[in-house]
Figure 1: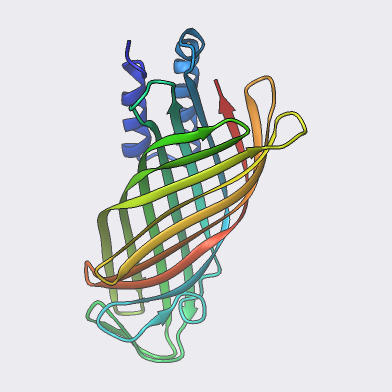
Figure 2 (figure 1 turned 30 degrees about the vertical axis):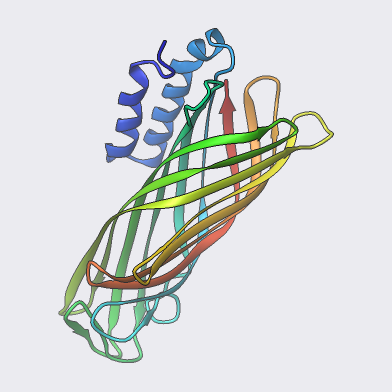
Length: 269
C-alpha cells in the first residue's frame, strides 16, 4: 500500500507551481489534507499534518551587485516583508523509510525611497537625491526527509532539507531600471524537537535548517508553543527567523535577516 494516495502528489505540485494567491495555495493545502484524511484513518501508524500562516516579518540587511553594499532598510526603504508559509507532511511507522514534509515559503514586499548617495546595482547607477522603487520577491520550496529516532513525550527529528529558491530583485529609478533573478537549489541539514507539556494538547518545540558553502550560507529556525485539540485543529504561536547570505550567486551578494513572531493554524489526521 502506498503511503500517499495518487491524488496527493498532483496537489502538492499545484501548490508549488500555481501562480495564484496565498489563499488559493492555502485552499489547495486544505484540499490535500481532506483528500488524504480517510486514508490516514485507515492506515494505523500514519499521520498526515499541515498548516499555514501569513504575517509581516521584519526585513533587515543589505544587497550588492557590482558595487558597494546597499541597505535594504536605510537606503531602499524596506521595513517589513509579507511572509507566507504553508506546509504538508506525512509521518509513518515503516522502518528505514523517512518521513516527508513539503513547505512553501513566499517572501515579498515593495518599497520606495529617495537615496542620499549614488548607488550602483547590476551595471546601473542610480543618482543621489532621486527616488528608487524596489520590488523584492523570493519563493522557496523545501522538501524535507527526516527520521524520528526518539518519539514519545519528547520527539526528535533528524534529516535533510532540499530547498529550491526562485526570486527577483528589481530597482526602478527616474531613468534607470534593472533586475536580478535568484535561482538556486541547496541541501540543508535539518533538526527538530518537540516536547509534550502536562496540560492536554499543549507542546513546545523548535527546528533548524542550515547549510554553508562557497562563502554563502543559509539558515532558518523557529521556536514555538502550540496546542492541538481532539478535533484535528491546532494553533501555534512561535518566532521564526531566516538568514540568507549569498556570495556572488547570479551576480548577487546578500546578507538578509527576515523574521518575527507568527500565529499559525494547523490540521492533523
